Amino acid sequence: MALSEIDKKILQRLQTNLPLTHRPFLDLAKELEIDEDLIIERVKSMVEGKYVRRLAPIINTQAVGNSATLAAMQVPEDRIDDVAEVINGYSGVSHNYLRKGKNKELPLNIWFTMSAPSQEKLEENIKEIEDSTGFKVRMLPTTKKFKIGVKFKIF
Image (tube, rainbow, N blue to C red; front, top):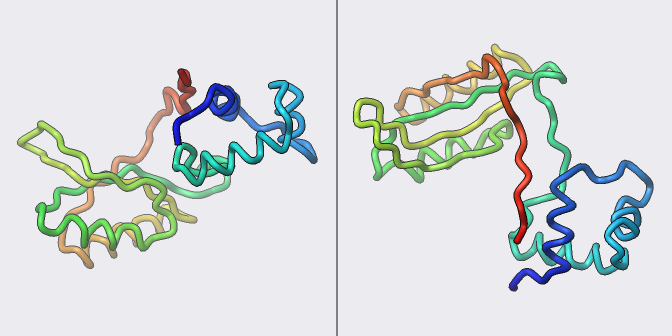
């Protein structure tokens, strides 16, 4: 499915907050001058086509009392899928990527983000991953946020 001009218009607008109303898609329809049913149909199609991963709130983990970290591991190529499966078994993992870096001194290749209800539980989960996989997890917690969020120009 190729993106139509209407799809691009909808995607561009969806990158900002949805209206917090009883009928947010109706409000978007009025704003974009597009039929509400068409917006809903196109959004469903873009989710199915994997142009949109999901429509969901982004929770500020720290504001709700949780702890979170960016984490990285150095994993041999033949174990990557197994280790990724272990990591993905934790509900607090929101992102998990294989990356190829150029740093030969510290060749970290699996990067993931994890949150937990407390710092203790976060560290417990990380320890379980280390014990289960046999590989060290480097925790890189946020010390200061400079920017969060991105808005792409949909061409």
